[in-house]
Amino acid sequence: MIAPVSQIECHQNVTSYDANFSSTLSLSSSSSSPWLQHHQRGETQLVFVESVASTVVCSVYGGYPPPSVRIYLGPVDITGLFDEPTRLVQVTGVPGLRQVVYYTQTSTDRLVLKYSHSQLVFRCDATVPGLHATSLHMTTLVRCKHCTFTL
Image (cartoon, rainbow, N blue to C red; front, side, top):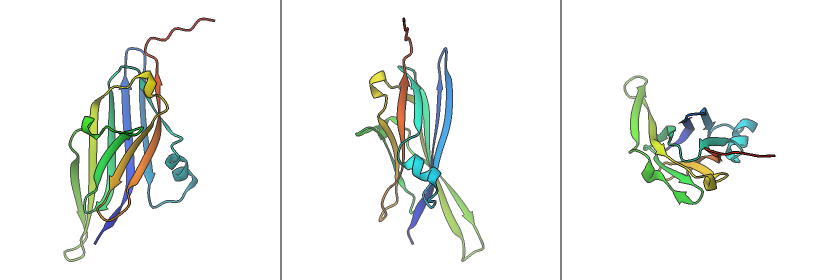
């Protein structure tokens, strides 16, 4: 039996000498709420500081068989910058009627973006064999590390 992914989350932390950003974004693929539609259109931003390493974690809940996870920045597949996915298995129910749910997570603590990466779409795709990918789309905002402005 094939089961779809039920939720994708992306957690991000950036720490620098003058900035500390943290955000968590998620979607539930079984919902048709306006909140979900807002996130699927890519209107939410991940905030980075130029040339500062950032920690990004993409977590996928559900899917059987376990989903594969791919990460993109714009058209470029950056999955190779992320650690091998880890999988946890949750088994509930009585013998013979057990439900198996997979929790798949991949992360990196070395994602460094340039100012030119600002406004690119960051995408986390979770694909269960035989089903279409479930995706979380977010726009990137890269702040200057050493910007000075004069009026």
